Amino acid sequence: MTEDINLDRSQYTKKILLLEFLDGIIVVFSVFLGLWVRFEFSIGSIPQQYKSALLYFLPIVVIATYIVYYFMRLYRSVWRFASLTEAVRIVESYLILLFVYFGTLFIPAARLPVSTVFVSYIVSMFGCFALRFGYRLALFVFVKPENSKETENVLIIGGGQAAREIIRDIHVGGHSEYKICGIVDDRKVKWGRDLEGIQIIGGREMIPELVEDYHIDRIIFAITNISSKERANILNICKDTGCKLQIVPALYQLYSGVVTVSKLRDVELEDLLGRDEIHVNNEEIFASLSGKTIMVTGAGGSIGSELSRQIAASSPYRLVLFDIYENTTYDIQMELIRKYPELNLITLIGDMTDQERVRNILEEYKPDIIYHAAAHKHVPLMEDSPNEAIKNNVFGTYILASEAAKYGVKKFLLISTDKAVNPTNIMGASKRLCEMVIQMMSREYPDTNYMAVRFGNVLGSHGSVIPLFKKQIAEGGPVTVTHKDIIRYFMTIPEAVSLVLQAGYYASGGEIFVLDMGKPVRIDDLARNLIRLSGFQPDIDIKIVYTGLRPGEKLYEELLMDEEGLSKTENEMIYIGHPISMDDDKFREQLAMLKEASYRNADNIEDLVAEVVPTYHRLQKQTSDS
Image 1 (cartoon, helix red, strand yellow):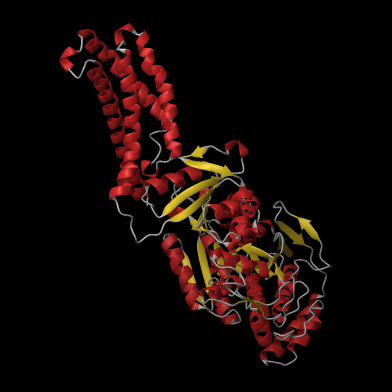
Image 2 (cartoon, helix red, strand yellow):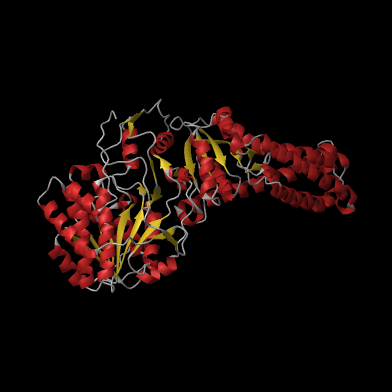
């Protein structure tokens, strides 16, 4: 990519040098033409004094022409797209040069006949027009447009440096399939001005009108320095236009400071949510992980794989990946080997509920920190297999947590969920039981720092609604939403994991950390926005069908139980829920009862769970007609 950019710049520089050379030839030719006309088309009739004056007149007007052309940006336009803006620039340039040409009449050594100065001035201006607009005319007459690419009308959002570089790349980089029709910028002081020959037309409120007037096909969001909320506000205006939406990556995401068309990305749902940027102290987090042996369970899952990526970047002594699913685990293993060839990476396959397997791994690798992300998480599936939810989630956590204390693990962090709060499904209830296990272990084994982190849904995770919606849209619909009013909290996978790592740094033992998930999002709005971003109209091109709440599903999720209070941490996005008092001895007896029932696949497992988790209230199973 860098080589391509350098090649484009080299070609562009050669074109500018050629243009400058031809400008000089035009100025010199115009002067000699003026003298030739003045002295009746006979070079021999030109007096010696005027021939001597040429030695002063020519350097003055040639150098002045180059300077004026430069400051009037006549060398920064791409003349295959020359328009009225460029014509105005040429006229303005020659209004300035008028004083230079006729100012030479007051310099005795450079004085030429007035008629010669006048003719050379007019011919030079005409030559400037002819050279620049002639190129466009020649292209129009002699070069046939490629039929393979249809021209798209483009509107650019933002009148800053990123927009300038995008315009240059479109003009110089051979992107003839794009025609830039205008620029939108909220700064009124810029309205009416032009950027690289493209006029800044107005502010964001004019976007729908401009899209209609100019028949815009594509909108490019070219602002890198803007808050997430402001960006979302503008993009939400754009998404309703039906145009293809692209966005310039933030500067820190670019491998170089150069913004090009090839680096544009499609607008994603995350851009429309308008979540504030997550701030974590990477230095202190990485320092706490560097040089340690770290184990991640469920390493092939959405959260586990992102945990592995961010931990690998912190230079641990050893990273142990553990999962039961070999395909996804193999994927993250290959990715980390490719990105971090020096990483001491151990990849293991096994079952969390196999106590001997877990014990052998901890005994051999002796991790300092465990991030426990392994769990069955799909609500409807667990409703149909409740015993498996208890076996895997609860007793997988119990086995790992108890063995961790025996083998000197310093920190144990459980990935929990907002569904553990006042659960209405067995999956949420099982995760609440996991939290209770962690808090009990924290009291029993104070040398190991146990904690849990509770957050909502993550965008794009395996089995989440976003991949499902995308698949349904690709198939032509319909898109299925369980209920028109259902809402959920959302966070991107990288930011959720960053906060998990930060919470682990803060922990002192027994805490349930609660992540600030921002404002809840209506799932129906997510579906409609995703349809629009895919270039379709909801309910017209792609139908939306409401199927009814699934078994165990509720309209909204909570992040905190009534009994819990919140304490702040240094990070405003992370809070601590106070532990709820519980009888550990009684809880152990209840766990034994649950284990026996789950392994004999008891029909009443949900009733038994409800006795242990008083906040668990099952919803009545509903049909699609409910």
